[in-house]
Length: 146
Image 1 (tube, rainbow, N blue to C red):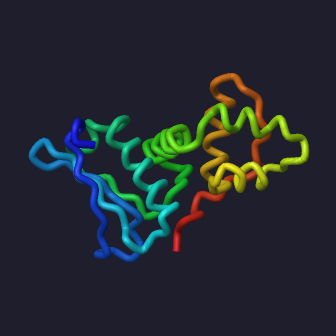
Image 2: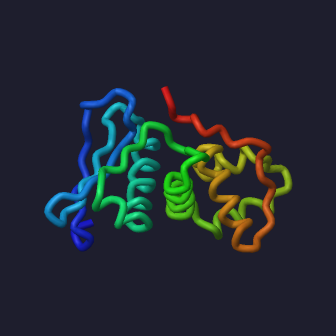
Image 3: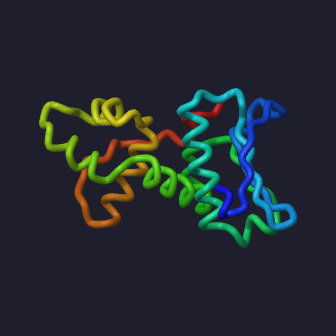
């Protein structure tokens, strides 16, 4: 991330904060909680990158902090979740996997090593782009909240 002038690090300073990003002296800092699993760290990093790319002007004004992933009520959080899902889950892999009629939604998630919530955002993204995939009935917005 050198080309974008981004420094990524881990922090054990906050128990409930998953990650945050802020700008200082034209350098962007992304801090990820050291209490998360490797899978969660990857999702948080992709989510924060979404903020950096999509919400840079807001980032210049104040840090963006995330204590709950998969937030469905805040538009900037929602957009960062869609960005993370599109970054971490390949369109073609889903297309290949859904050809298997024996594979259900959770089997798809497991096969692609994606959380059900992240997969929901991915399928919504694909649906918005004109591809029809089965969506789960409800997305839990507090999935990673503790």
